[in-house]
Length: 339
Figure (cartoon, rainbow, N blue to C red):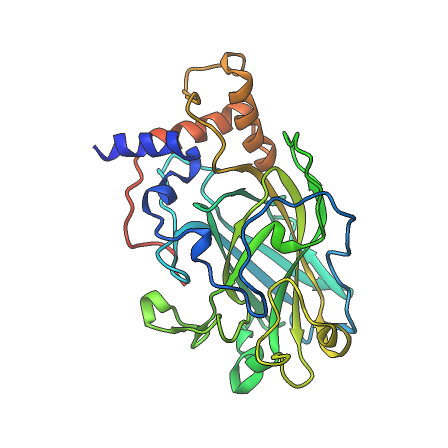
């Protein structure tokens, strides 16, 4: 019975987010209004002159940080801040996002570790959410996130998530043109907790991201499909307070005062490939273990090749992953990653 339900969900939704579609309790409309922004409807960017998507503010620094680790999980929501990691069939290798991106600070900027995946491969749509945690380490290997949070430091520090090098991706035949606003590409929700090193789910820590955004914990929902871009992650230390007025700045729009006066840490650049949308029609998509590449239709080719190119795997490897995502057994439970 459970296996049949998984098959049905995989056909109705996108194949590789079946677990999310069966269990997701939240949608994009449930997301909180980012600090300093009015609620806005999700929309497709119109063709407008390009703007500078990634401001390059003031003096930059590493402040003793020598290593940064970004951890990403695919999942779904059980409420505004209650992200839960998806469960996948054990045979699924590529569609399950459970990745680490490691960066080393050298010669005044962040260098991606050679073992990093070539990009973060994700899908767009309200059923797909991606958790991101950021951890900083000093030269002795000690986790030092608390340096930017404890003893009132949280009132000065905030991560911003900007976009640069936005381009059409594989299979994008639309008239898409980036309008310069990162929020047209993705939505980010701050899910920071107090204490910062404890979990809301497992330790009862309080969610504070809505009132005191830090960006060490949070999730993305991607709005535009079949695009590639660089996610530019910038940590700011305000001169006095990050609260420019009553509210903190939105995740994608530091204030003019912050850009000119604050201390900015060197940017971390994470390549992102939004390789397809969750609402793409998959009713006639039936991957099998027996089919050869030439046996698939043009539409099936586009779907499978999108994954293959995004993950750097062969066509048949991608088809195999889709097959097991549709037909494998993945039972939702309370285990896995939560903030």
